[in-house]
Length: 249
Image (cartoon, rainbow, N blue to C red; front, side, top):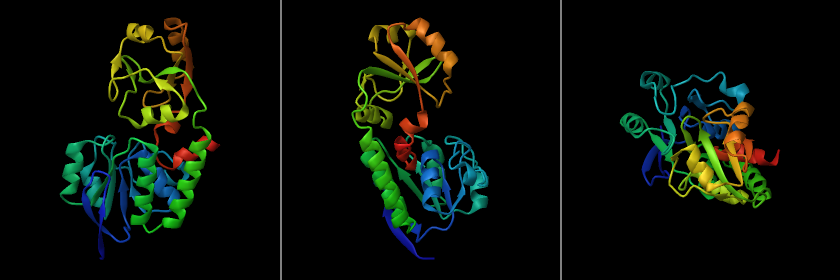
């Protein structure tokens, strides 16, 4: 088997079968992209739900933070693809001992385009990849600065958890034209009173990872009558693969 050396987005050199024939993907947004370009994905996580008609037949290797190592070994992947934020360090390091593991590290749209380009090149599926990247560029450019206002983007309930700095979602909120009022990094917990004090123009309730529904908005409007409360598609705001092109749908 011919091996080629590729750099991943964490700056690590990875020797990978050229092209890989058995890929395990540990990140939902990257699984969708790999399947969209026709890559040979033989294993994925229970959270990998797109494209539905394809992924339903792919073996599940656990979650993004609790891998089933025996199942992964059974699948004999020649490449595993993960992400620095979404996967857990201990699990990734364990997999590195036996498999080629390519890691993404994504905070911006440019990072996402770079990830897709790199994986397309690794899989020798460049034409399909470039077509999808262009669709994503066109779709995200059309919504640039289409929004406005001071916002808080909530991802969890009891306790409230919000999106802060140094995240892809924060970058994308700015791309849309919003001002994120959360200045802490990552995903801080907030009290109802803290959100009240910040006095956002709009509070965005993500459909994932906590599945906010209209019933949660009714409660929230009682807490924050001066803020517009809006349900948003969490996949569109946080999936940094080919789902970005759905901003144009």
